[in-house]
Structures are given as C-alpha cells and as structure tokens.
Length: 593
Ligand SMILES: Nc1ncnc2c1ncn2[C@@H]1O[C@H](COP(=O)(O)OP(=O)(O)OP(=O)(O)O)[C@@H](O)[C@H]1O
Image (cartoon, rainbow, N blue to C red; front, side, top):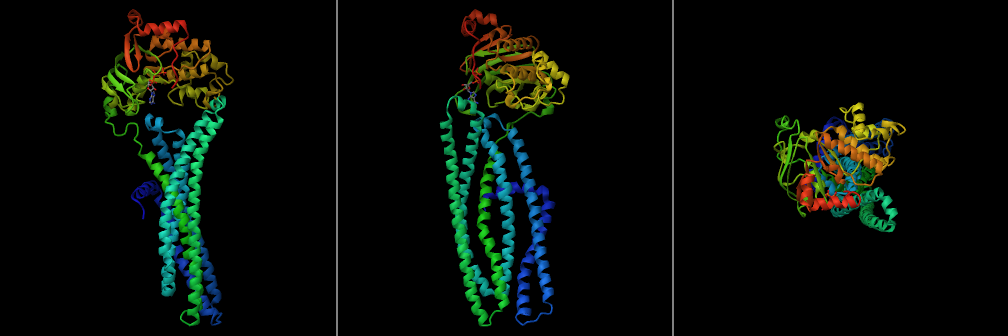
C-alpha cells in the first residue's frame, strides 16, 4: 500500500514529469509490444516442441525459429526504447525539480539559514535529488515493467495449465507479506541513513571551511571524533539496511528454487500420465524465470523506491519551508512604486524584536527617525542590537513589533523588491566571489558600467591599489578574496555598496583589523559618504560619526542616549565614556557576526 504522503510525493513528481508527456508516451507505447513478445515466446516454444520436435515433423520448424528470433529482437528493442524514454523523462523532471528547489532556497528567509547548516541544504540538492533520479526513476520503471509482464505471463500460464499456475501462485502471499515487512524496516533505515549523511555533510563542510582554525587550535582529534559519530550512525543504518536486503533476497531465492523443484516434480508426473505435453512443461519451466526473477528483483526495486521516498520526504520539507514573503499581506508593487521612487524618511516607532520569535528581545522600544540627507549613527557595546536595526531595515528579518514607516508606508507591507533600489548595504562579513574585481564591484549588474565601477572605486579610495594589481580591474580573486589583504577586501566591498547606487547607505562596518593606511582610506571614504549621502552607519571609530545629525547609543537593545555629538557630550553619559575609551585605546571594538 502506498501511504498518503508518498502519494503526495508521487503527485509532486508527476507535476514535473508531466512536462515531458510525449517522451513518456513513446516509452509507454512500448509496453504492450514487450508484453506481447513475452507471452508469444513461450507459446512458440510449445509449438516447436509439441508440433515439430516430438512428432519429428521438421517442415515449418525453421520458420518458427525465425519468428522466435524476431520476437526476441523486437522485445529487446521495445525494452530499450521504454527504458530510454522513461528514464529521460525522469532525469529531465529531476533537473527541473532541482532548479525549482534551488530557486526556492534562494528565496528562503534568513531564519532558515540560521537554523539549517549549509551542508544539510547542500545534500538535499545533491544526494537526495540524485537518489530520486536514480533509485526512484529506475525503481519505478522496472517495477511497472516487471509487474505488467509478470501479470501477463501468469495469465498465459493459467491459460496453458491452471493447476501448474496455481502452484506458482502459492508462492505469492508469503513473498508479499515478507516484502511488506521488510519494506517498512528499510524505509526507517533509509531515513536514518539520509539524515545522518546530511548532518555529516553539514559538519564536514563547516570543518573544511574552518580547517585553518581547527589546525591552529590543534582541534583535529575532537573534530575527527565528532565526525566519526555522524559516519558511525550512517554506517550502522547502512549495515542494517544490507541485513534486511540480503535476508529478503536469500529467502525469496530459496522460495523460488523450491517452487521450481515442485513444478518439475508435479509437472513430470503429469507428462508421464499424458495429461500435459512436454512442450507445456518446458515452456512452463522456461517461463517461471519470467515470474520469479521479477519477484526476486521486486525486493531490490522496493528498496530503491524506499530509498527515494526517504529522499522525497527531505525534499518535500524543503519545498514546504515558508518563503521570505509567503503568506504576508503586501501592498501591490504598482500602487507604491511612485511613493517609493525616492527615499524621504524612515521612522521606527516603539520597535521590539527577537530572533526566531521566541528568545529574549534584542531590540526593545526603539524609536527614531531618519530623513533624506541626514546621517544616523549607531553606537554601543557589542551585542547591543546595532546590526539588528540594520537587518530589520533591510528586511533580512521581518517579524518586528511596533511600527517602521518607510516614506510613510509600513515596512512589513512593502515587497522587498519594491524597496531594494533605495538601500545599499555594506555588511560586516565581506564576501568576495572567485571572479575579477570588476565583477565583485558590479556583481554583474548590466546597468553598472565599467566607468561606474571605476567611479565607485575612486569614491572609496580603492582605485589606486587596484591599478597596482597585475590585471587591475580584471585581477581574478581567489576563494574568499584570499589573494587580497583584509583592508583591500573591505575597500572592494565598500566600492560595491557605492556602485549599487542606493539612495540610503547602510554601513555595518566590518571590524577586522586592517593596516593603518587602509583604515585611514576607509575612514576617509565613510567621511565622504557622511557629507554627501543619507547614511545609517555602525562605525567603530567615533571620530567618523562626530558630525552625524543623530547618534543613537544602544545598550542591551534599548536606546539609552540619543542626540548629536554635542548634545551627547553635554549629558556626559555612556557616549562620553565610549569616546574616552576610544581616545585612550584603539577604536571601540565590536564583534564580527
Ligand atoms: N541570527 C541570530 N539569531 C539569534 N540571535 C542573534 C542573531 N544575531 C544576533 N543575535 C543576538 O542579538 C543580539 C544583538 O546582536 P547584534 O548583532 O545586533 O549586535 P551588535 O550591536 O551589532 O553587535 P556587534 O557590534 O558586536 O556587531 C546579540 O545578543 C546577539 O547574540
């Protein structure tokens, strides 16, 4: 019996496969040809033995043998076309499924990526889909073909001798019961195998990315034993799977052999009594293979299909993940286009926020307003909620309480696409692609010309160092920009923000230590932005933000002081203390997220 979730998986797969109906139809049309050939062949065997060999009549024998050869060839060709067409349908459906899944993954909210290791998602897209492509497609193809052929052959057997056919049928109930039992056990094991494999891949990916840290802190043994835990779970589940698989296989092979023996014993007696012809017995024994081989393979096909259902289950989970803006009431993009053409103001009113909707509030009663042309600076100790404010403004996280108005419209009701042109965000994490500098600044956007890339680089004082690189703007970066210094990487990332040309610059400034020359360039560039643009910035050098229109001082998610530099100095509170710390030490250090 197919369980209802399995039926849903099948329907989902059918949705993708139905685009290739024509190819599938050609394959399916081969089915009756193959069935006919499978039945015709034993009938020809009976004719050859009973009509020609036993009575010693050779006239017409060669013709019958030639027909047998043709039937065999037609059967092979039909089988080939069936497998080729339906396999191709399956593979194309899996390809479409992979693309659809990847498209969905790109639209998943940050909360999904916070809770799911990258390796788990990776194994959904790779090994789980592979299991569907191979195990499901091949398993189902063979199962369908074998079932129809077996049924046809059984009907033929009943037609030529119902007593012998009944004997064969006796085998079916125990085999089916056994298969059903093993099917359930296999399903459990395959589910464990797939999730332990995904967890292991996730851990492996993390280790490989952080291999420098592992080696630096001599943590190889700890990491190895943790990975061993994951692989042992995988191995245990695999061994159990093998046990069930092998036991079932041998029991069925045993039952098959016993039945063949019984047929020979019973059938020979009937031949000697003259009740059945020799041709019928030989054809029967010959045809038994066509029933028992599929019956035996049935178990491995079931195993393959079970494996793929476990993969389907994981993939469905991913398909069911709620997309970033799914289920939210959003204003129609065309009605707000004009209102959001230019940035006017952004206002936070008593905003509260917590990650995942359950933990402690990391923003509490936050209120401020930013108007066009103004600069707003966020300062505060590490973990006080500065980056969170920027993440909420850019809709990286959505479920806030209170109200946030962008040009008078509630932020939660604005589709992300409708406001993306207003903001350019420089994140703490500098991410560089393994492409050239030109691409890393423009991100391949066709509207950003080569001149605009150079302008952006000049604006942030990156142009000079780029000209000194071997291929200048065509200089190819290695993985994560490892052939640049940390400061150079930051400048490229900064140029990217400027090139994107948003009307409001959001700077979540990175804090990794850079050499003092680059640091000065970065500060000069930030200073320039502060003079010319609408900016909201987290800056770890208070000297840079001194001239901001407004400075918010945060502590544990609350605004504890608010005003411009002079006003905050006059209060002589937290801001003054932070300023003193900076004067006495280096910049206020904030952790990197
Ligand atoms: N994705 C997340 N899931 C859960 N909690 C988070 C997440 N990101 C940040 N936090 C928590 O939210 C709080 C505020 O973090 P946030 O990154 O906004 O601080 P910050 O002031 O920007 O710190 P820093 O200056 O060190 O970057 C911290 O307690 C942090 O641990």
